[in-house]
Every structure is written in structure tokens, then in C-alpha cells.
Image (cartoon, rainbow, N blue to C red; front, top):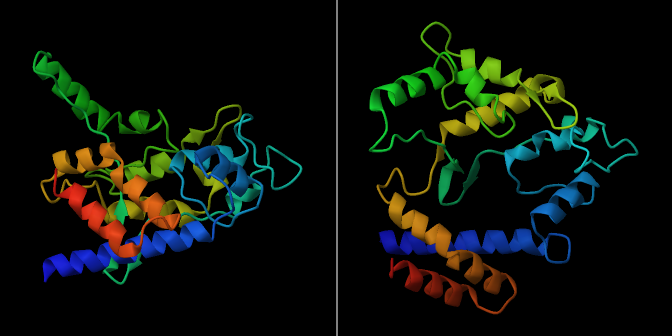
Length: 237
């Protein structure tokens, strides 16, 4: 029964992704092209890293919004929302994916000093840690004992940008910022919760799902053939 359920979920995912691909602008789409299309107002939605938040607001000369005549305009940012949680027939509660970065202490390190640095970086110095790249580093710690929202508030006021800088709160509404942070409530890194991180890493790095999905999108494989190929490779890990 569980295997059938997983099979249906995989079929639904492939069909949904194919619909998105067929509705996309023509051509070989990749990260830079998708950003340019959105910045020019030629597509209503893209799948992109949150690191887009600063150039979206006209703060980076090498990647300017072209939706109007002012490449430094924050207009597009003010009209953009971010979806951090997807739900569907196989998961009505919704799910999100996150890439959480960790501190690691090597076996030959000064363990006590390393621990003190991590404790500082995740507490007293956490705002400074987030400031390294605030448009892409969201606070997994929202606050501390004295203020449950201390770090999310501080993060939202951090300046972002390359050629010009502005705090996130000047560029995006409170609803947008709160929605981004709320995405961490349901976000899971693939395989961690299930104790399958090593297997998940192999699956991601092998890129066979990308290849098979592309063949299905291009009608080189039927839906059943794509599912069978994916399951065959999965069984080898």
C-alpha cells in the first residue's frame, strides 16, 4: 500500500512539473535566463534562490531589473511575493525544502575554543552571522530567552545589496518577510528526518531525477516509463 502511495505521489509530481515546464517561455531555461525573463516582466513566476532579493530591488548593477526604464528601481521587489510552502493531493499540510548550514568541529580542532565560537555565533553574535549574506541567510533561531523574535527582527533590518544597500524592511512588506521566515516552520532538508541523509545526498549528486524528468518533459519517456526508471536507479543506492 505504501509503495503504491509513493508511486502515485511520484506520478503527480512529474505531471505537475511537466505542466510548469510546458507553460514556461520557450528555449533552454537556466538560472540566468529565468532571472532575466522575470526582471523584464516576461514571466509571472520563477523558481529561484532567495539570493535574488537584492538584485530584484535594483541594488546590483550587473543584474538590473528591466521591467521599467530605471535599473535601480525597487518597483519589481515591491510587487513580488515568495512562496515557501507547497501543498498538494499527497500532502495537504504542505512542505518546504531548506538548505540549513551547520558549524562543524574537526577532530584535530581546539574543541573548547571552537565550541565557544559556535555559541557566540549562534547567540550574541548571531545577527553578525546573518549579516554575511542576509538575503540568503534566514534566521533558524528566531529569538532568545528575553525576546522570542529578537533575531528575526534584527535580520529584517540588515542591509542587502552590492552596488547600493538598503534594509530588507525598506524593500519588502512585513507580510513578505514574515512569510519567508514562516517557511522554516515546515522546511526539512531532504533525508535528515528519515535518517537517510547519505542516500539523499547520493540521489541529488547523481542528478538522475533531473535527467529522467527532462526526458519525460520532452516526451521521450511516458509517465510510467519515467517512474520505472527513477525507481530502478533509486533501488541501486
